Amino acid sequence: MAIEDRMATIHEPRMHAMCGHDPEEAELFRSVLSRIGDKWSVMLVGMLHDGPLRFTELKQMTSGISARMLTHTLRQLERDGLVEREMFAEIPPRVVYRSTPLGKSLAVPVMAIAEWASAHQSEITGNRDRYDARDDG
Image (cartoon, rainbow, N blue to C red; front, side, top):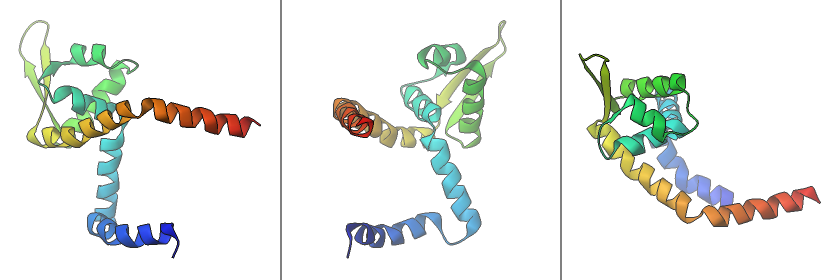
């Protein structure tokens, strides 16, 4: 039996249990993975793990994100219950975002992935360079 077949056999029951046979359950599962797999969502969940931050602080800490995309991503995280938003009646208005207990539970695997990525950056860069050099020839 090929390695791919063995891996599929090992993981198939787990994937069926996670995804379910119901198309609505499968779609929900995919949408959750899509949300937590989005680069901005992952970054924001990680940043909010250590404590609440204002919108402007999040914007400054998240290089390359537009205000529109930051707003959209925070709203989606709030909708999923990973982030909560608190607005203070001040002039100018102050808005603070914080991680919910559900968001904090997601931060654990997110931080593990970030640590893995950091630890293996040079190895991955070397692999990419070798692959690209092979394809150029």
